[in-house]
Amino acid sequence: MEPMHTPFVKICGLSTEETVDAAVAAGASAVGFVFAPSPRLVTANRARVLIERVPEGIETVGVFRKQPLSEVLATANAAGLTTVQFHGYEPLSDVVAAQKAGFQTLRAFAIDEYLALGTAERERWNEERLLIDAVEPGGGIPFDPAQLGDARPTGWWLLAGGLTPGNVADCMSVLQPTGVDVSSGVESTRGVKSIERIRAFAKAALRQ
View 1: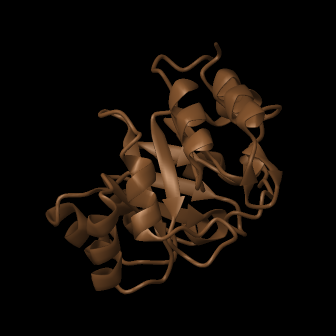
View 2 (view 1 turned 60 degrees about the vertical axis):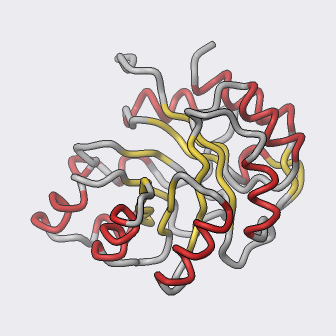
């Protein structure tokens, strides 16, 4: 069954003007910048320069992992982000604090972390915007969609982990997420984005 909504497509780990422009032109709903240790790491100042190129209405997402909340919010403000993505076992209280500070939020879960939640805790998290990722975030390794089974989030959520221009449409058809998030799947080498792959991924995800 095809989704009735226009999928939310997030292109993450951007660091150059050319790739930001390519993601925007390809129809991305959000562009992401990594502020945690990674080959894709950018500074708040660099991100601010890139975010100035992004039209209003497209989310600008900062990815943080196991960093103090004060550091997360300071960096998010300095960069001019619209959205904070927590990617390292942060509690719901951090998510709520970021929302109170004026940011939209995403809380990423590795698939094994999400499946380990109790039913009541999962229901509570399903009220937030979620991202379900592979066991190794940013590693480009997919998980078996069958793993989610009946535990598929019931609210707004993004599928991530090992997605490529070649498999994204099929994965979306099976799991019916709100949208998808990609980083390594649109790279020519680790940490280096390919404009051609960004275009191909967005085209496949949006069924253009």
